[in-house]
Amino acid sequence: MLGDPLHPNVPQPSPGQPSPVRSNPVRSNARQAGPRPANRRQDLLDAAARLFSRQGFHAASMRDIARAVGMLPGSLYYHFASKDALLLAVYAEGVRRIAERVDAAVASAATPWARLEAACVAHGEMLLDGGDYAQVVIRVRPEDCAAMEARLTALRDAHEDRFKALVAALDLPAGADRQALRLMLLGALNWSQTWYRPGGDSPAAIARRFLALLACNPRGPGGEQAP
Amino acid sequence: MLGDPLHPNVPQPSPGQPSPVRSNPVRSNARQAGPRPANRRQDLLDAAARLFSRQGFHAASMRDIARAVGMLPGSLYYHFASKDALLLAVYAEGVRRIAERVDAAVASAATPWARLEAACVAHGEMLLDGGDYAQVVIRVRPEDCAAMEARLTALRDAHEDRFKALVAALDLPAGADRQALRLMLLGALNWSQTWYRPGGDSPAAIARRFLALLACNPRGPGGEQAP
DNA sequence: GTTATTAGCAAACGGTCGTTTGTTTGGCGA
DNA sequence: TCGCCAAACAAACGACCGTTTGCTAATAAC
Image (cartoon, rainbow over all chains, first blue to last red; front, side):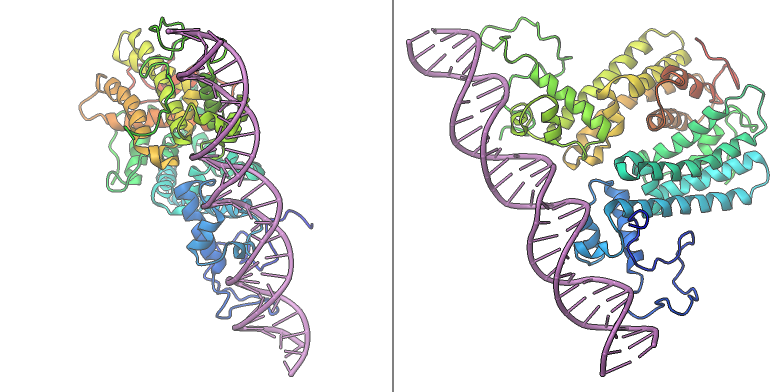
């Protein structure tokens, strides 16, 4: 009862915060540190993120995840109410991490075009090399988990709205196709997860090469990319 | 024994041919028509394509597929040696259908840019509206089926090589980034499967809008797209 | 010292998975 | 008419699935 059964009755670090090194000065009556609790919940999230990103949602089993952290399968139901809830937690954290980086990159750029480029570079770096959480967001389709589809889609859309704003801020000729511009950029970046292998071009270089191809880029065709 | 167990001992239509309407004048001793055999194998392929494209490889079970054609689960092992083999057959047919359309479109275009545009339009139309077989090729990742990964990847690569040739034929300035051009175009198109919904822009329009955004397009920035 | 809570173990639940095995059916060629 | 064979049925196999239940140490609060 009492709402959806996403969170079992366990003290979660704090929703909306980056789940810090667990050194936050909690109020008195909450369980605080102790040698035991450690960050087993975080370990579980990490393991789930790894397996979901490498094998996909269906192919990664709860037993796999439990084994990865040295638990028995039933034990992780103390921390997460279901496999769906575990995916949602990983997915939300993934979106949060990508958005965090993108926001920071955007904030430190001056012009609209520089902001879009910074966002694409940050987005691409997270997708391709930014850890398992970020990769889950692209690898796992919301419809892979029917029970969570709406929530996962909402999370992904909220992130992509940032790019809507960035493209809207560009100074473009009147009839410019801003929607296609956004969809092409994000699509090409997201799909790059399927062919990217470390060792070749860096994620940042890939993102910049894509952006350099766009006709409306004021640098002009074949423009140089900054290092 | 004798090679990989992909094909049970059942008369397959003919490898490498488009599996015609089964009206080919077979030699004498092969079972030919009869009221029974019909095209149950084809029905099975169709059902598998549908479920694989809608649910993905892991979420679609052999029981689902059997039920879709009114068979018992064990019965489809008469036609396909394993789930993996069934996926390979669907995937190969999907690649064949996409490539067929792309080749036809390319053949009926005159200039290098027109050929690339025709290929993108055909590719996009197949991905988005070209039936279940084509959609499986994009929806199912080769690594979803470890046993077939190499073969699936080879099929997909063979198709994408067409675009390598089309881009190589373009008349571009010296330092043009042809690889990024191809990857961006194909990536944006392939990813569009995740957001496309019938009713809005047609697949052909989407493909043309993407191509129109590219800086190297001789029509110039914001160029018009043909009807 | 008692009590409550945290975190996990141990073992199973019913169900579904891909697959195998043995048997039956119906039409065809001889 | 007989035997053959494609094409399916019927029924299970063992393995694995997500999940539940009951219990038990360890820790913290009183």
